[in-house]
Structures are given as C-alpha cells and as structure tokens.
Image (cartoon, rainbow, N blue to C red; front, top):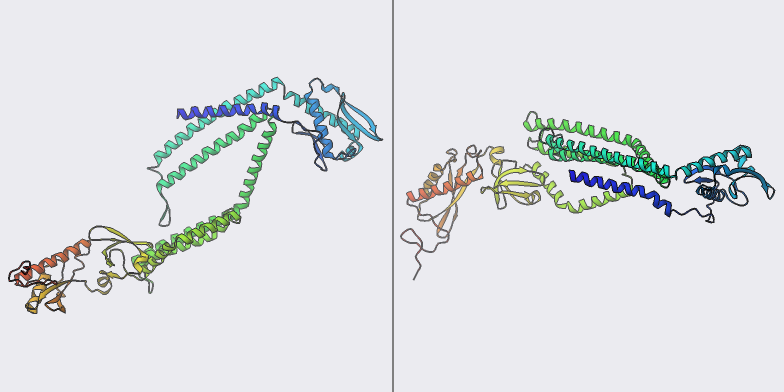
Length: 548
C-alpha cells in the first residue's frame, strides 16, 4: 500500500510539472496572428486580446470585411499590450476623416488600435464619440489585465496556487484511497455473512460470489468517479492560473459542461422508456411469482387439469417462465438506448447470425428434450436402457439426460440422440399399469433332461432368489428347440417395492444371485447346463477332451 501511495504521489508531481510547464511552451511556440492571412468572410468579427472578446465589429470599411477589420485590430492591440514601453496613458481618441468619411481613431503614438465609423455607431445605437469612449475603456481594461497576468508577481502567485492545489489534491486522493481501502476490507468481511444470491422466481440469477464481485466493481466505479471529478476540477484550476493556458481551461470546461448537459438531457429524454422498462420488469416478476405456486400445486396433485400429467408441471413451468421472460425481452429490447443506431442493429444481426449457425445442435437437443418430457418416455428415478447403456435416471434437462449405471458411472446422453434410439423403461409398467417387472434369464439344457424336471429346478431357483415374488409365480418358457439343446426362458416377477430404494447395482446382484441359484438347483437335480458351442459329450463334467 505504501509503495502504491509513493508511486501515486510521484505521478501527480510529474503531472503538476507538465501542467506548469505548458504556459512556457505555449508562450514560446504559439505563433502570432498574421495580419496578411486570408480573412474569413463573415457578417461580424470579434476584436480579442488573449482569447477574450473586447467588442464586436459588424460593418465594412474601406473594402475590408468585419472579419478582416477585427483581425487587424486584434493584432494591433496585442502589439500594444506586448510593448511595455507604451503606457495606457498614451492611449487617445482622434477624430478626423479619410477620403471624406468621418472617422474616430483610438491610437497610442503611431499604433492605430481601432477605427470607428458612423456605420459602427449606428449599429451600436450610440453616438460615435460615446462608442469610442466605451471602446477606449474596454481596451484599457483588457490591456491592463493582459500585462498584469504576465507580471512576475502574478506568475509567482499563480505558481503558488498551483502548488497548493496539487498538495491539496494529493492529500484528498490519499484520504480517498484510505477510505476505500477500509470499505474493501469491510466488503470482504460481509462477503461470507451478509451477501446473498439474487433470485428471480425460482431461478438464481446472480450467485453470491458474482454479487460480491458486482458490489466491488460498483465501489471501484464510485472511487474512479471521485478521482476523475477531482482531476476535472484540478486541471482547469491550474491551467486558469496562467494566461497562456487559460484558453485551454475554458475549452476544457466547455467540453465538460457540454458533455454533462448532453448526458443529462439524454437521461431526461430516456426517462419514459426507462419507466416502461421498469413496469415491464415488475409485471414479469409478478407473472413469474404467480406461475411458481400454480405449477407447484399442480405437481403435488392438489388439483389437476384434464389430460395434464403431474410430471409435466416442472418442465411446463420452465417453459412458461422462459416465454414470459422472452416476451419481456422483446418488449424491452427496442427501448434500450441506442437501439435505432446502425451500429447497434449491425451487432444484433451479427450476434443473431452467430447464434443461428452455432446453436443447431442445441436447438435439436431442446426440442428433443421437450418431446421426451411430454411423451412421458421416462422420469427421474426410472430404470431405463438406451442402446447399450442401462441404469437409473438421475436428471432430465432440456439438453441432456444423465443416467447412473450399475458401475456407478454417470453417463450424459444428448436428448437428440435419445429421441432417435429405442428406450426400454423398466419402471413404467409397474407405475402406470400396476404390472410387476419380469426378470428373465436364458438357460440351455440338453434333450436328455425331462422338461418337467427342468421347469421344477428353474422355478425352485427363482424362489430362492431375494426380491422375487412368490405370487404371481415364476414360469418357464421353451424358447427354441435347437439341434442338440433346448433354450429355456426363466421368468421371475420382481418385487418392485424391494428394489425401490436400491440402485441399478441391486438389480444386477439379483440377476447374479438368480444365476447362482440356477446352477445350484440344476446340480442338485443332476441336470447338466448345456453350452451352445457344443464339441463333445464327455462322461464326466469338465472340459471336452480333444480328439487324437
């Protein structure tokens, strides 16, 4: 912190030296107005001394336009003001005529400063002597001020004020830096206790850490605004102290005031649109707050709608909320500042093109996810099989479906892929049709085994397996009569309530236990389980003996 403060002070000192050196550079390098430069034709011209207008010329004289006359008078005034040998007491008013034209001249020795004609007096609405006296007073005041601002005493006083202003700026900036450092420390303490996420309905729009970053950013913005405000007051003040840079100070202040006035006027003009945006946001918030309890009760079964299933409630709520927010965005978007500008519209078209080209798969997944939800293909908690992947449904979104396999691997499948695949749902029949699920396994036995004994052994194996129902009883089907063996299909009804709280691993374990019981029961009954790839019929159990 100390190092930052030292660097900041050095930077301000360098800035002060640059600002105070500007007057000397400008005084040495600024060219004087050339009297022979082409005059800008205008209906009026201002007679100035060091960017300060003394009076205005609005008539021609001797073929010279008002602009040309004012330029010559301004140059004569500057020459007189720079000549310290000529005092203000040498200024005098001379009345005469030239080529028959009555004129009044203000001069200092051989330097003619101003020429006043009857046309000038007529436009000013005053007699020529009175107008000449008025111009004389303005010239004396302007030249006196011009010389005083270039005196050593004035420049020393201006340098002293500049130094004091720089010291005051450094002190205020250091104090501001210390105050905001304490504010940042306080915000870091509040981050864990007071800052909460911002929610819009049931959506978390801004997380707590994001809100904390936004608050920090706003505080930094306030700090930057204060520093810029101090600098905006400091630089014009210092530049105004020196005559060579006072014009820069006026120009800077003019730009700053014009910017503030333009911004304020733009804000006043934007107030109706801003009010409309606020009303749209309030209405959107109200509609979202109504949709949340409505669909929550619909999902809980408090009331029902004809043809509307309870599991559709969550997805429908998200869809309705999306449509409400999209409608609000459509209304608000044209009210944003700069919407009618070509740059804004060009960027909007460009972004729309990028989204349309890059979101083809996303839109496909969104549409497929909506179709899967409203076709009731499965729900969270169902045991399903999609292609070669089987397991329990953990999460269904509009983009992907996540499945927990028996090996505890979570597989995310894009909904567009699911919509083009066959889906086997092992939970739908019991939930919707009240039909228990059948666990089926295939057993190969030879023709020498009586089928009644085979049935008895297989059914006994099903009864020994945990999680299988005794009623309805298990049954056996003969699937195929092959050349040397028979394909038996053992079908055991599963107790869904037994497997309700278990994972897919529990079903796999039940299948494994059923196979174990089949081997035990067949061995007890003296039944040999046949292998489809038959090579020999040995007298003893074991691998086939190779023929010699």
